[in-house]
Length: 326
Image 1 (cartoon, rainbow, N blue to C red):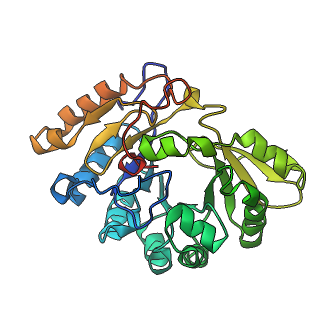
Image 2: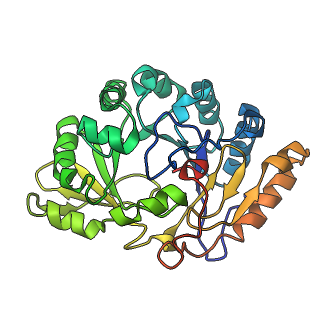
């Protein structure tokens, strides 16, 4: 079987698929204020085009798919899409990233369709602060989390982007929240992706600082967590809670990168922190065969860069984060 091996010997087995760039939240570090340049309907891939591409990627050795956005649950056909992905041979891990605002009404159907795991963005447990960061409703998010837990979706991972002067003082509260509800917790450093990410640079906090803060209350021990992502996990001694630290800035994990990203308009991004890409929508609509499309994907993987340049060229990536997928 052909496999996706990049020039640095890394095997690409994980695809993050943005099924829409639209979102019902406006997190200040993701979508710039007043942004309206979302993908037009005719420029988004159809359900059939998505299914075809995922099948081709699976035949090239990709077995892990994460559905992202924007907010994937704004798509009315999301359950059908997941159901069809889950039936493709070779897909062993189908997960979703969501803001959970609509999860209360979708959790059971997502589980039935084939979602195995979810990640939920949750940057604050204080309603007013949460609204300032996201322009969303915290009560809806909590209801969605509890509905997902009741639907037996497991694990549920909470993603908290840690920001100075915005939520750094809540990291201990988030640990307590996740212990109480049986969620996994992951802290994430801010990244300078697009204009919104650039505006968040002053809020950057190294996760070494977060570990130092938490060590004043908790004792940690090493542990492992199933998944294809880059988080390094610790367990709080005496608790089941696992805490992941995702450090794209202070300790990048490019050497083990196993993923690429596909946008809702069919652009294959080879690195979150670079501009290297392959426009697949024109190829699909020009009538290329499966073999020809696979050949284009294989050639693109040979352009996958060794690493991002967030630290040396933080203004290189100008696209909005919701266009790429988290």
